[in-house]
Amino acid sequence: MSINERIKKLRKCLGLTQTEFGKKIGIVQGHFTGIESGKKAITEKTVKVIYSVYGISEYWLRTGVGDMYDTSSSEKLRVVIRFFSEMNPEFQDFTLKQLDRLLELQGNFARII
Image (cartoon, rainbow, N blue to C red):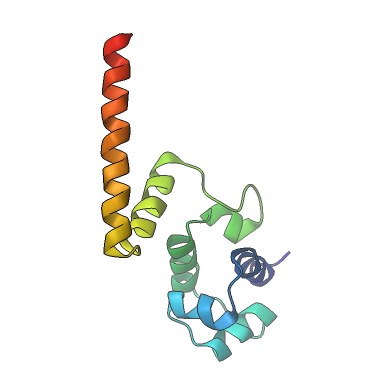
């Protein structure tokens, strides 16, 4: 499978149209169609933006080897932060309250042990 095919596979796994996927990485739909079909070259910058924006494994994107998603702790945290920043403010507040509650429960649990 070529890198072009892996990009298409990623887009379909995410349930995005070419327009939606391309918009998030700064590429218009027509150019993105060319990338998926293999008619347009994929630049180094595009590769970096794709794995950065979508939180996938750079190694998988480039080679097709391993898991599609990067499962390192730092990558997971980066994806969570990006997801949080895209939430509406009310849901951000709700999420922070739930995290506070979890931390409080963890502290209480640590005192019991």
